[in-house]
Image (tube, rainbow, N blue to C red):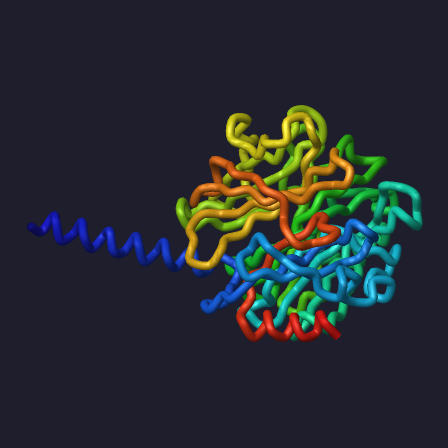
Length: 352
């Protein structure tokens, strides 16, 4: 009897601990989810566009699919924005967005030099801070204390597809806790053999950034990383594009955000597109559903296709891909569950 009581107590303890970890590590989301915001780069140009949906599959464009803020003003390096990723702000207050500061139409090259950190109180009015990595360690808030990954920062030629996830356990130098982990791929043409995944930490104001540190180096180029906390197994799951080799979106899992991240499972990956090229994964969950949806770009076709498939509650076993509906020019982006008040506000603004 005592053994049974101890067993039940331990089960309740582990369940409580599991729930606590899930609430701490997951990005804050509203309890009363009414719809979904698709925040994405437009296929018509290098700017960020919005579309909203009630069910997560059928969307409609806001502002006719045109830019939702003054791109040239807030992308201070090249005047273009790609690969928009949106999330809720610290403690669920406000909103943050990260973009690749890049304009291929202007430079005619697939190079860029930095990223933009944007924030908003209402999803409509945005401010931004731009980080030009060529300017070296002095642009980072821990310039004097953290190690440098490069000797010469001026030869940084790619800083691609930044995304964010909240890390409640990060401790700043002053002892305060909590930060956004911003992760992205980067290439220094004079010091790197291939693109690797790096990470920095951004403060609660979303205006300061720590020096890059290596997150993933598997011995070959990797880009377009998406990280989510999966309550079903209590692990962080990563989705990623391998440049070259077998095509598809691959996965890895880790107990910690900063890794180690083991090599991908070569048998369980987003493989529906055959020999066509895929990139830009973004996973999200629908209200009341423990399973996952995974969106991605299939860019071999003309025009490019933007697809959403299903996965199980462990973010594994991908199936049932379909094209996103109602978005005229979908491209690399992300998804934010929103409340009715947010949905209605965006709908009204999007028609103005």
